[in-house]
Image (cartoon, rainbow, N blue to C red):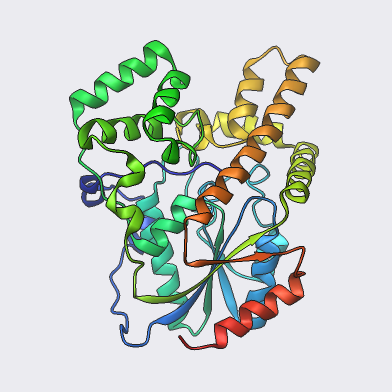
Length: 345
């Protein structure tokens, strides 16, 4: 599950939306005196967020709004653990399968789309349940799109040349030295975010993690009830490895081959997401048994590392209350969230 890149302030004004998102970019008047409740469920990969959200939705009369940056794309099903057809039939899901993999979809697109879904559901007396592990998407949903200095073509061109000459690993190492806090939240292969982060550092003479939007007040247009669902790391990592194996059995490699024909490699965000990047590398190899073993090892390793980064990110998100799903089973977790939902603040 990769994240979208940082969006400059000027980019927000000139973002070109896909037809679906253009329809969603609508302003609404929200009652500031009595903001309506929105449940937000975050957590690391493979901790049971989808199951919990469906149980909540059935109990509350709610619908799910995905906060997964890759489930946005059509065809990225197995590798994103996208809710099954049966799950989506049982409870309506939104912000899933709305963009072809050949087109880029960024965090600002998500902000307008998800906010539109919330307002539409609330107008229908349905409870919005925002669910996902894409940390940056959830942060922007809660606080609004980020601001940063406009891109400077000369600096960007220099960094992109360095990327071409020395490779992404060298630039990521530099980012780790200059801003280890931000580097911890992204993958070492996310070229767009690494280049943009180094550009911001060059322009502001300070770390990306020090930008003011990291410490902004949350939006007051909704009463957010935020939960971080997790498991003990040993149990979580075991679940992650089992899921990776299950994905492979379900035809993950074949899915990536099909998506490659539809333009996956040209989508810098989707092609760099965990699992898909490793699979694309494997497809370029001679596909020996050793190549396959290396692919599986890397797939599992990067998935575990991503879960670790998710823990790191959510520790800084003070709105979220932590809930160990193994200490409190799903039924108890549902009761805890429902009890909180019924309380006034």
